[in-house]
Length: 309
Ligand code: MEV
Image 1 (cartoon, rainbow, N blue to C red):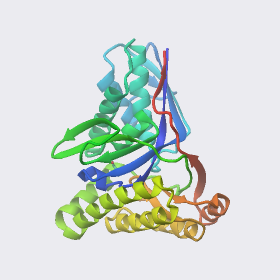
Image 2 (image 1 turned 180 degrees about the vertical axis):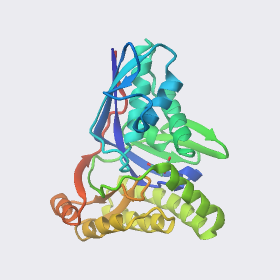
Image 3 (image 1 turned 120 degrees about the horizontal axis):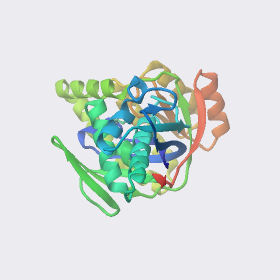
Image 4 (image 1 turned 60 degrees about the vertical axis):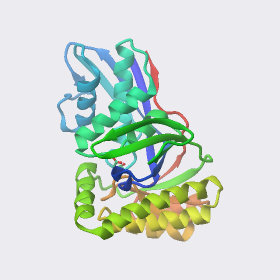
């Protein structure tokens, strides 16, 4: 039997723009998914089939990372599914990690992150490596257009290039508000692409999000939460302009802002989650719940993929 776990993530700045090669910043969070794998008479995932629609990421991960006989996979997750908090990336990374350990191989982060990116790309039709890299490496991950200090690895796909960096951020708690509306990432990513191809204002929004990421990172590193919050608010507006907002996200963001430095949607949008940067977590939490959302306090998580055989 082998077991692996990986964390969820919060994209602080830069979602969607990162698919076009712009900078983005994400942090791992202290909600994790664990996968246990053991040889069995036939394939199953928990009490269901590997072919179930809900296990599409796991199935692709198995296809890419396992050449042996049937396995029983047990998945336990603290990460709500389809809510922008990286549940798919975490289950993909943890599955690849568990299969590697079961096969008796040394499990190294970079090859796992590369394979997990291939899985997300295949399932979603288009993706950046930010979610899967954050789930693999833990801590904060910064995607840049060029290599800099802290480079983890780089990857090219079609005409895009991403340089993934380890990044240190001060340990921070965020309040996440889940709209309880699940939205698939693939169609949202495809919608942004279509908009960017036909509307130069959308292409300009993507570039501005890239600039916001770089400034937002500096603001967070010097603990200038006022500036970081302003940039989050602007990033949210630009994501709305790109068509990935939702009225329920705006409602939670508006509820949080009176008690927060800033608030924005996180992940693919279209529902899913928002988060707020605040030093009044109880007030923000109560405001999100009163506006109909489910609120969580999440902390930055230093640990990425963890494997035991
Ligand atoms: C989803 O968590 C983040 C997106 O930027 C897609 C991706 O980067 O693959 C929307």
